[in-house]
Amino acid sequence: MTSENKDIENVAIIGLGYVGLPTSIAFHDSGFRVTGLDVDVNVVEKLSRGISHLSDSTIGWDIPYQSSRWKITSDYEEAVKSSDMVVITVPTPTHEDKTPDLSFVEMAMDSTIKNVKSRSGTIVVLESTVFPGVTRMLAERSAKKYDLVMGEDFQLAYSPERVSPGDIGKSASQVARIVGSIDEKVGMMLAEVYGKITSGGCTYVGEIEVAEAAKMVENTQRDIDIAFVNELSKTLPSIGLDVMDVLKAARTKWNFHYHEPGIGVGGHCIPVDPYYYIELCRKSGTKSEISPVSRMINESMPIFAVEKIKDLLNGAKGKEVLVLGYSYKPGLGDSRETPVKIMIEELEKNGTRVMIWDPFVEDADFPEWCENIDNPIGTECDMVVLATAHDDCLSLDWVRILKNCRSGVVFDGRRALDRSEMERIGWKYHGIGV
Image (cartoon, rainbow, N blue to C red):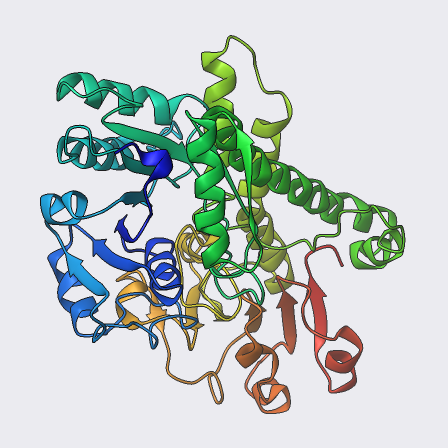
């Protein structure tokens, strides 16, 4: 039976991280039988008991571990051979030199195709970020290795993940999806399948490479937009303008891309995906002019913030700074690629004692050298820095915090505090782009 006329009932999800786990739950909640696979046996053990291994507070308590349609394993053979559709959601990070690291997706693709039954028509879908051509290249390499024919023994597709953890309306069961496939009928059928797990619907866009490129372009464009705003936050104050006044004025135009400046961007997409675009340009014989500069600007923001903080402290050595927030995004405990880490490392190199508080980040997720505290209220310091705009940070008793801040200076690294209110209660307000 070929895949274009088979029903999809059994779905395997390879990789149960911040994308794979919510995707698994979305498939299960839509009526599919789901086998989740992760190579980390500790992850498998926890999920089998209904316990999330993720620090993201937006998921974890709806794991259907007692359902007859839910299974967790670390065995590829068990997961793949019993499934009509295999979805790969493993990380695609970068190496230290910022070149793409495809080792995780390469291993997952190879292990998946190795266990595909001949003539089964199993559909293999990659969701991880890659540059155009990678999905097909890896699948063809493994098919040749195991004497299988792509398009006959298995079908291949790409559907980029678009989950935004913690954002209302942007979960795995809500975001709009796209899918590209080597076969139009398979692609149209997959659009229907994905349409069952998300209220945002799914569109078939044609070739795999179109879908691959779309994912890469989405986050690279966002990185460029944020870089422009961060550059403005350095330029406009030099002529006496507050960047937020200018951005709010520009926002009144219908097509303005509004972003707020900050100490940097983090997470698994924006700091990483542009390097896949840069690599694509290199491989195609062209050169990206705009993306490397955007990366340079955004990666410079933690150091820029440190220089501002040092000026406000009249030197950093021997000073004590209370930093509020460590994760890369408000409302989450996810600290992947957080710019706060770079900022506090640089402060400590300059002789500053940094005390950090984040109610969402678990102790094990802080660097060992980091001095994380249990309560910011009553903590003596020379300055307070808002690094992550958690509601828990914004709603603190700022009057009480002021009593223990020797200089009375607050540095708003996210432009999230109400400046007039902070100044009304006695704070000396400073921040990015002020």
